[in-house]
Length: 622
Image (cartoon, rainbow, N blue to C red; front, side, top):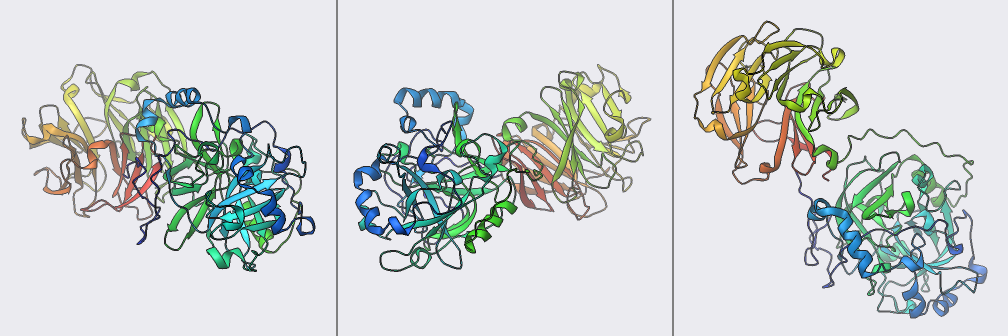
């Protein structure tokens, strides 16, 4: 598990380690964030034409310097943010911070000020209407990207249009003609013709744009001066990124900020979202780096601020920022920009198939119990989850460490709210895995082939009021009888541990005592099992109350096996709330560990052995 970072102005994180971290400023970041609260319609200066607006014939470097006085540069605002909302009042900030709630406030990162990155800067634009030049001039963020002409920038679609200049590593302390890395007029815009500004509809998936730059006054192309970033496809919904931009609407000094954070799906959209305070209006168009070299000043970009609602800030949420997925349409526009082509793509937008998302940490913090098995009978590992409200859900595995869909097996507020522990296994000999469940009352039921038969009814193995009310954890495995999962390990409330071999629809089979009552196992908080060592018997994994994690190798009727420590006491594993092991990836072996953490983050450790395997995030933390 990777905990959500809590940043301060002094910390200097980056997406990847660097020998020379970006210098930070001793400027306190804002205590609340967001990319801006979009207006119902864009200003006249934010036109999204795919052609040139105000070309070189009536727009020169001298014109830019004359127009962009320090006062005008200081008054620029993000086009996704009405001028009157650029700087929320103190009372408004207090209301917004309160609406986030203590759970959000505890773990959310905060953007920190830095001196900047060479390849990232600002866009200044003004409209042709002299009555609006001073009041509605706007500013966005942008980044130089690789191109044959060495002259392209990436920004948001709602930032395009008008007579504009790009200022790399913009420093508010200097006038336009004194900027360290110069400035570059934008002579052409490339925007998907179907894009509609600042909408909450799926068409906002297309909120990206490219600008073609003229050489600087010295005749150099921008890429030759500041370098260029590499554009990569957004690999999926869950990514670790560093967002970078200039939040001028709530930053009087007008310094850039960065925020290392975690992305997740924006449901219903071909977009991702990330939580971070301090990403105020002005960051629109700013890059989302998957990797960045702070010394070199460039990196790899998988997103940009934009999309739903102009990139962020619903009325009651200041701390969410959005990005379109960089997929087929994004790279089609990129190719057009590199080839200096303007292409009409019709009038309708057909949203691509959305990758399956398991949801967010807020939901998964309510996952109470989990059990692995091949419940659908297709040979791929599936996951059953019992939620705190009693709902039961089956997640269908894709055989490659992920999931393709979900299906409800039981509605909330039924008997499953009283489920205490459960285990998957092949107890009844059917086509799919079975589920064995212990209820708080002591009742135990075996549910054969739950993927097809469901979780109603089943076979009662113990009545309410039985000794099984003291069974705190159960886990299925192959503990000494056969290659199939027909055995059951039980950790009782008094610390006794027993192994039931050959469990089936006729009963619990043969009991073997592995640990006597009052043993150290009384402090075993979580127990699961898998074949981590490849021996004759499965291995048992225990998370103790102090955060220590142990693996007991070759558990069987003769004992719990050899103990190997996987994590020490006081480790981050004290936040492991639920875990199960199964076969989820392509090797077809039950050595993959699924963990739900206290903050809702859910991860899979594939190919786990005597040490934890490779970590893959399934659900981002809340």
